[in-house]
Amino acid sequence: MSEGFDCLKLKVGARSVDADIERVRAVREAVGDRIALRVDANGAWDRETARRALDGLAAFDLAYAEQPLPADDLEGLATLRETGRGSRVPIAVDESVGARGLDAVLDADAADVAVLKPMALGGPDQALAAALRVRSTGVDPVVTTTIDAVVARTAAVHVAAAVPDVSPCGLATGSLLDEDLSPDPCPVADGRILVPSGPGLAGGAFDELRRS
Image 1: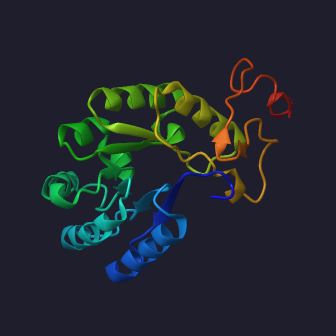
Image 2: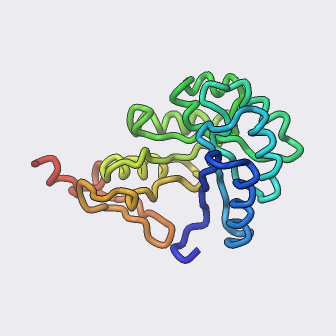
């Protein structure tokens, strides 16, 4: 990709399954096999629809399907993982972590990937602990933002950097804001973010915010 990204996420679930399959097919054909693709249904499908969608999407070598079922349906997510092993699309949870808690997700064996948002989990320390915990159970952690302003976004960068061998994370969200609190001390460049090396989140990058 011209901006250096090697992983893309597509939203699905707002249209028919057939339309979503064709959209993902078009993207896969456009970007080739070297770009990782993820889809996120935001809990839009029921169990039957999700199974049909994942069977159709399996041909496109997806990294995972995020929240294919509503957040509370951990049993259904676990069943999707089990029944889909022939046409395997890994299952990621996001909203389920907040709705049911990490313990319940892990106990239900409901996920291959856990999407972790530091500002939704109580801050960087809690998010890092969650990431290391899920990793220890064989679940892959992915750190993302909640479309945060620059301070919280920078904290999420630090969390992601502290997870060994972390998968591509959803941190390139600053451009989605009309304006921000402060200049970004760790902007995305060529698909990468350099972690600030100063004390705290980013040295003195946010001192003006403290004084205002």
